[in-house]
Image (cartoon, rainbow, N blue to C red; front, side, top):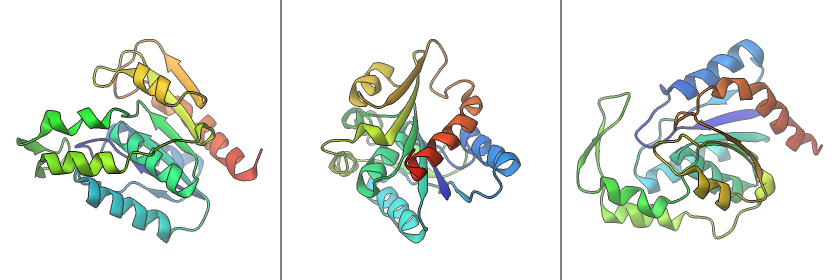
Length: 193
């Protein structure tokens, strides 16, 4: 069993939640391998990188995705029939990159800089699943998300297991408290329970 964490846009494996997951596993589930790849903001590159990682691993693989990482976790959950825990996931990707086009962007945790164009918007849109299987997902949303409208995800993942908390923010306050139940949920999916 392997857990993959997919971080958000302009984030990195140094993000608070990514490190929280790694730390929790180290102390509570050291038997579970953990991967948190450094994803580029360029969609074709990110898709290729995640695909290569998943295909290099033995089953079962579990996904956690936050923000744009939640979008990528959805793409991979549908492609490979994997369970995914999504944290304030991005669903309106058509509107994401245009806000950042043709300006110098900097990673939140590194000195890396990027330049996105309309071509990258089209790449991202090309990966949107035409439909989803709600049974793959547990979606964690907080209404105080200042970056994404939680209602879009609530509608998009209708039929999935959805937890909506009042307040909070885009980072999803108190995320760590969900990890024990999330791991149990992943394992129940594997066992067919």
